Length: 338
Image (cartoon, rainbow, N blue to C red):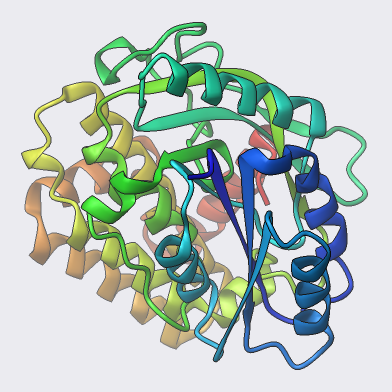
């Protein structure tokens, strides 16, 4: 059995997937790389097969009909033989020194039969053209050097979130909680990281800048104009986060509060994008989203609607919408997200 399985979802990734794969090869025989070719029509399949041939004990090429990012991750979970599981998107990469430290820490934990449910590390927003690279660190909220639980965490700042880039899950935990991401849907990374949280009991934080999250391709799914075009998929994921986890049933108050904040920012993004589009249809969808939340969970609706961010995104009239967008732009600059 391998120590770590890394799934690399690829769709028409010929121009950048090599850099991603090469950054992961130094993991050696402790790691298996699962390159999932998700119905690509370029040279992705050939490149994946080439790596599998050159590194037969380390790299596996998986070819499937196009099912989207979520189905590529699902395929990775199905094929993984590693004790732990990581997703690295094909246009991102990892820092090699940080990578080797994470592998050593994982190995030490496993040798000591300390099978933590989740390992956390920092990630860097590699935003093209940005002079300052925003690093998402967690040393102010998570203990270092030992295993901990949700009881041991401190309060996260606004804009500080455990995104997909920050986490490594124990593979069996993902299977036990029956995580399955929807097909043909963007933005499922929110579901991937959020849904298993309530099943996580033990964690370990390694304070290294491991994952490099690239932002800059014109066709990238997180570009604002593309997110607006795909707003129905953002809303779908937003609703699924509400449906899949009942926050009121989570006994740990610290975990519940963190997950509420995570859900809050996803809902704010959905709301602001609907406002930013400026169309009558999307303003109607904004009302429908908030009505859905109200009808699904009244307590959740009150928490989201009357929190600071919820209040800012629900100001009435055209002037209120302008203030909402302005506040969102300021937060983008301060926090560093896209």
